[in-house]
Length: 176
Image (cartoon, rainbow, N blue to C red; front, side):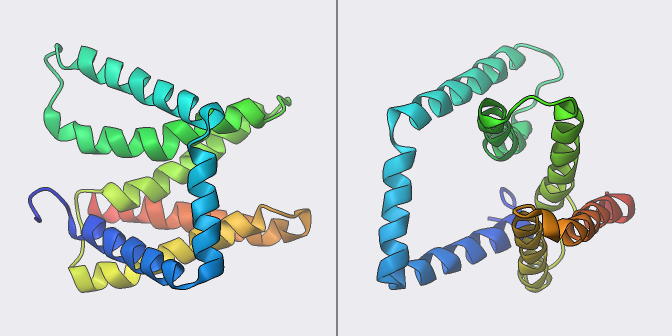
């Protein structure tokens, strides 16, 4: 299994499975998850999502005819499309265009690049270390998400953004 998935990806899958199992024990959370699935399957959300996946698949298909394409990239492309491309497209639809829209989008994606690079990078630690690192990074990401909800959390938002960027770039600097 380590030939296809890294210890980081296995660790992430383990933590997601644990979280989902724990969520299914609570009737309130189970009901909320069912509501999320029903909402995600509505045509207003599912048709654009399928369109974005088809768009990405079309370009992957075109790239297969080039000399620099390798099938080992398909896992990374899939992760990028699902976790960066789709959210960016949905966010662009709902956002009001302001004078700093593209700068803000760039900064959000830069922070996201650091986090995703951490998850899919080629160098990984042992499974035990990854089982400890993943929840730490996830906790920082959750703090960052909560800190972005209210203006009075702006200082915490700056700190969490800095820590996430530092972790991603520090990791890249020393291990990539």
